[in-house]
Image 1 (cartoon, protein in one colour):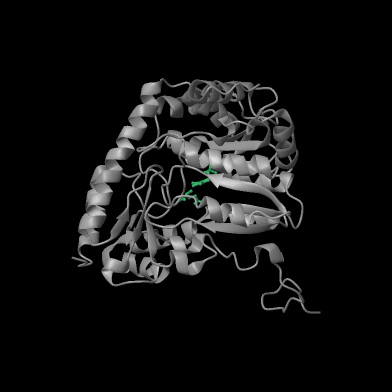
Image 2: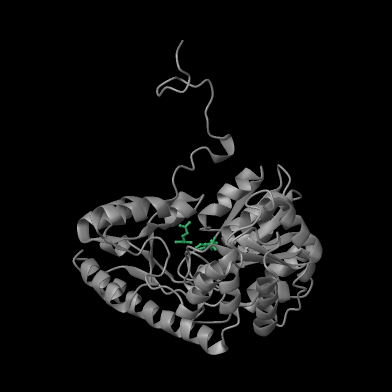
Length: 398
Ligand code: PMP
Ligand code: GLN
């Protein structure tokens, strides 16, 4: 009898759930693999090439050795981290949260997003997200059986178009998935923009899921959590993570905050995804959150300088640069280099000059809107950014 496990047996129906059909491998995995294969400088996937503070790393190591968190931590996260998250929200934004009921630790912001979508959406609900959107949004909305409705951010400023947002709202709209500071454009929503978005959410009784993972990486303007605006506390799920702020993207310690009802809903989904994660790392991120204001100011100042360094290099190499207000990404347009297809450009770039970037088109439904945009990460050592700029200059754009 034929072995049904043997390779090559035709399956009667596609293996992959239709919600995920066509999603393939993430652009970050594809481009990081290309960087390794070609020995290129990886300005694609956003991760720092220098680890975060040694004292935070030491806290994690000591926790492992002392047996703190080596067995399943509490489902909502260790009390030390929940308390530290609440204290952080109070210190930076004046928000009062009960660490017992209004803070939930997740496996990175990624799980916070997934659990929020699974918890808060019914099949057929519509979710409005500004595009380009972080790639997991589309997947999580689809896994929840919901429908994404993109509203396009356009260069040079990538400002939220409030008329288009208003026009996108229907009777089926359940929530707005908002990301500010915004990956990949670096847009940081202003108080006026957030107030307008909040007004629409209140008028139409919508939830907002606010992805604020780049909250401390702001160079121009100010990060304002939408949950601080009138009427938003009871309808906002706020998500952040230690990955960007503390430069430990591999630890995957994130958190969700909101009212007790919202956090309870998200926790109900989350408990069946990972249940818990990263016990010892939770203590370390708690220590990180308690660092003085100077840590946060220095982080932003350091990245601000790197932003300018890479922006100058990209401009000199002939790219049109859209200077980001926040995050550690720069979006560029390759049109001045005589190119229009960002995906093809990124696939060739490592072979042409030994640098890897990410094509923004994969973050769009409206492919034409992002076709010629390419994103570069600047969370790298200065000498690496300088080397990348030299290599890109060889493209001969100018
Ligand atoms: N949201 C955005 C906008 C991101 O850019 C990222 C990752 N870099 C995440 C969420 C996921 O964060 P984490 O690594 O904490 O899961
Ligand atoms: N958030 C990171 C970025 O935008 C990548 C995270 C991932 O690899 N999924 O580059």
